[in-house]
Image (cartoon, rainbow, N blue to C red):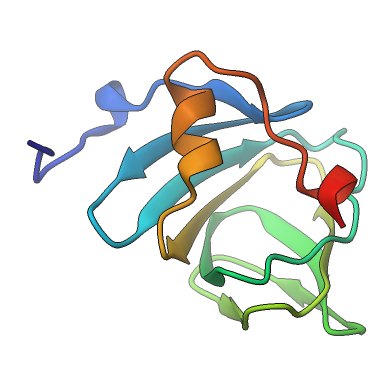
Length: 128
């Protein structure tokens, strides 16, 4: 059975995507990932997922990302939505502070859950 509450001490950073670490919370019908992006990270690749919709919220720092060919910069409290099948990514941290972003996926991202449990990191760009 899944827990209901998670504190900062509970988050275990694991390589979820090649070169990107996050903490994963798995639910029955969705998955949440708390990403911690360092300021010197390389821009992520553009990808899409035909079976998942994605919502994200920037908790700290600032990022730039592209969704459906449109690029935007977001800061704390700002959100984004990626419909199924829409190309997105190109995420990069803006400034000298790390960025914390929480993504929500529905249905669950089983490949992210497997990576969090010690499986291989999943590269969505390689699947595009």
